Image (cartoon, rainbow, N blue to C red):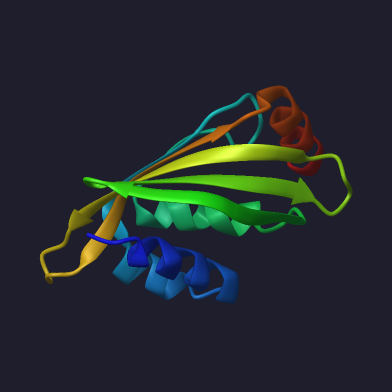
Length: 131
């Protein structure tokens, strides 16, 4: 197992290749947990629900820069620096990706957990941009 599937996840998201996200990167029964008390927080079940979340997430203007990535067992851990275009979001995030082998011999992302370093700041930002 490598971090290649995570790179492919970001590449597909950045280019708007939602079909590839749904069919070749995310497991059909993948789960994404987003901490917080804002409109995008909660648990998304299934590739379709996760892609819908990612489409909504793209409505706000912010940028993520990967600062650290580590692969151990079925997990890839990442630390991002995330900042919004309007300057109201500037915090670190930790993401845990669970990667498993797929029936076709490839790999799929089966789970993602996303944790901000400053939950209050993240909640305020996402409440303001998503009602």
